[in-house]
Length: 86
Image (tube, rainbow, N blue to C red; front, side):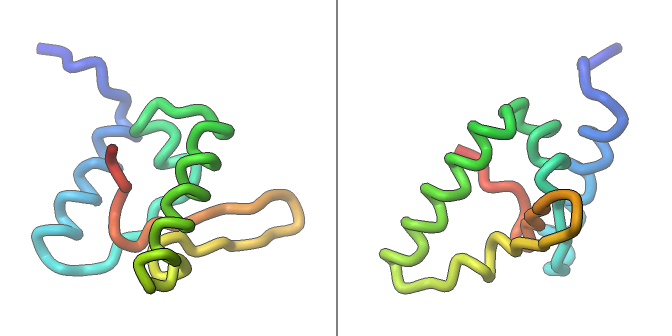
C-alpha cells in the first residue's frame, strides 16, 4: 500500500514524531520543511517571517524556533521545535 511519501519525507516525519515523544530537540533544515510541507522556498520564507513576527509580538525569541545559519553559499534555517504546521 503506497502513501505517496518519499523516503526523505517519511524519515523527517519520523524524526519529528520521535523528538516530540522523547522531548529531545531535533533540527530540520529549510529543505527538509519544504519537502514535508510541499511549500515553495518563497512560501516557506514568507511563513517563517510571519511566524517570527507573531513570536516577537507574543514576547518570545523567534531564534528559539527558527535558527538562521549562514554559509558561503546559502542561508539555512533549522526548526528545533519541529515543523510549524498551519
